Length: 406
Image (cartoon, rainbow, N blue to C red; front, side, top):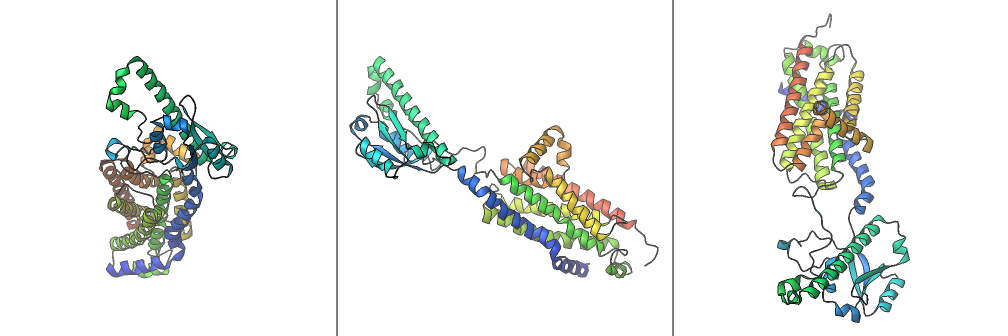
């Protein structure tokens, strides 16, 4: 059986047309995803906007305004234990000016997109350049909106503190209260449901892995046809050899799985360490998921490959069409397909669970979104059970096949 394994292994690696779809195709898809999502990914991160600060007499009268502006610049006074760690976003980069006129000049010269100043009433205000107000850049719009909200919060806090001081003069004597006025630990920070950063595009990459894994069934289909008398000249020699059909099936299954696993492991490593799609620090479990998924695809290809009265070309076409159909419900084809797949999960969860492409995607979701390994182990067991069914049915069908002549 070891000799047969090596023979099928060499035959599989030499078939470049199939290796292309299992290895080169997912790499091309990841490159396309990078081009598609690069601009969108930049829009989801707020960059610091250059702002001038008019530090005139009104500014110096307000003790808390400096803390607020420093917080907007990402240099707040809160410690990491207080919740002001390194996850605070920098909304502005400060250029200091001695007066409002000097700040305006910085805006006119294009060195700032606006300026901050303190009015006669003690409120902190922001004035933006016309080009900034009319900008179509979503990053600029988001940043300026967040800055405006922070200024409103500061002004409202100042009014509340003033009202409290008017009613209770002793409250300002409390050092803890007075020191907390105007203090901030940042106005914008990243929050997540899990303990690690989640990529908003991970679903597309996981769906692509699911599709690529199923495309690996083409390897098993191609190799199993080499053992069939009516489809291959090699099958005639194999049929008269002393090797049993169980040994033949085992050699085909192990060689096709080895090729598929090697290719998909390379694709996963590129996704993880080149593209940067995280898996929650559970890379060893993700490798196990790749191994189980490619084994299931090999078993599925084995089952399609032993279907009688079909040519090798038709079997390969059937495997590709089935892969494309099943991958539709994982959301790979866009937002509408994604919405349909989510609806199917809600209204017919059983159909979603028996979809091999969805099973592959769910393994990576379980690693990324759950704290413990229980959902992952359940999904892994489901994939192994599906694999066992595919292989068992394929063995039964192949053992029952007989030929009138050789």
